[in-house]
Image 1: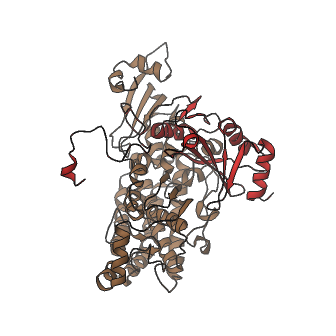
Image 2 (image 1 turned 180 degrees about the horizontal axis):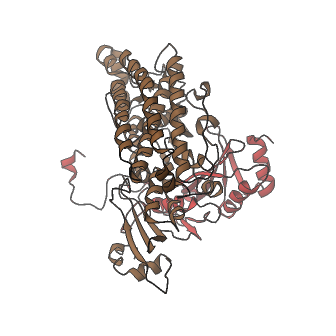
Image 3 (image 1 turned 120 degrees about the vertical axis):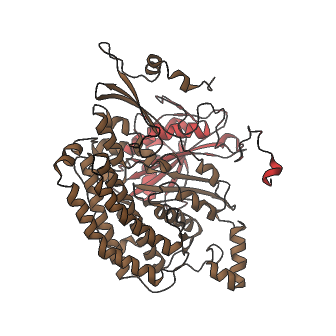
Length: 414
Length: 168
């Protein structure tokens, strides 16, 4: 029967090793070490059963699924708007990117074109989210190698990004700020001012953070040649995003398949060469600078016009309009009650998430809910390479490799 | 060579024959073709290795369930991407629910390992030759494949929830 209790078997280590085809060394016994499920260094709930020969990792069995919440199943029962909160909770370090990516997928299905102003506001929000994602990843990489100061220092800046989210949509972590067809509301003068302030202040902070780690002897020794992966293996593993670019492949969805007016902006794709932890750190650092460049351009050239498409059947009206206009009230009711059908179709849309190509594959059978919604979650795809990347290294290297991969449990399990 | 839907389809059909490739369509700009279980492994390998096409990146794969469709009840979707030509292609394989067996792609792509485990976990697809076809996101004790449409969202095996208390 397939229902045997696996955890009970774990007491029999030799049997476990045999079942999983793990190496058995005759001369001296290997140590089995559980890294996780909940450990401060695993950055989420997932387990790695390591086989250690002294300090060296011989083999590893990763186990995931501890916070699996069946998002793909839940999405099949929810009207299109009600799926947005599910996407927030995947990569919660950069939830606006997930939201916007999902909204763009539905817009593609419905054939809605979004006005330029809304597209630029989306770009600003997505790039702020990318900065916040990268600064968490890189600063925690510092913490894992023993440098706590940088983490506290840049965490303050994340607070400022969250303040901007709060001003734009009212929420800080699970943002939900977009709508199908545009934004919920326009950027207020205060929000614009806050973005301006951020653009002035943040470069200094980030330059200082970079100075602390980039040329730090200890940090370089701890990260160079740690958790390295070749470009060929990375492509076979389906890597995208900073982790792929660290190996030297310049694949970026924003450049290859531009969405939301990314073709209007000037920016570069930073690439590494060796694909080790230090390269991943440098690529993310540089991407933050490029994101700042994009925000600056979008902020300076923010077009006039509407912040949402003229699609009353699908665009959920702002609350103020619902209170004051009969039409908006009717459409609000119809959309919220899920009485609006989508056309029959099948779309795939991908955006460059904080971690890589975040794809949404949606099949609609003409009903009020998707027939099938599949998330291509970059973290799920990276994490299976983890075993290969840590083999032969030391335990301390495994910790750094994990934090530089930026595996986020919400996206891993979905 | 610039890849367009027409010449890619032409190349694939001349390689594998019209009896193995059918239902070519273009729902969202991505060419979608249907093939059979005998061809899928060879087709994916051909797309990867062909010098002209170089459609070598496996973006994603997932299962779909169409209850009551007989021979086409279960569907496995593969999506590939040519990073050189920026060309995407989607391949579908249909099969009856009584026999959801496919060849594995783990010998071609390392990433197929977990994707196939996910499809097995959610839909019960069996991949011949997969090194470790076990559940990945759900618990081992689960006795069904939860993404199949015959299982509504609520957990049908639970008896501690009474519908009247939850407004159902």
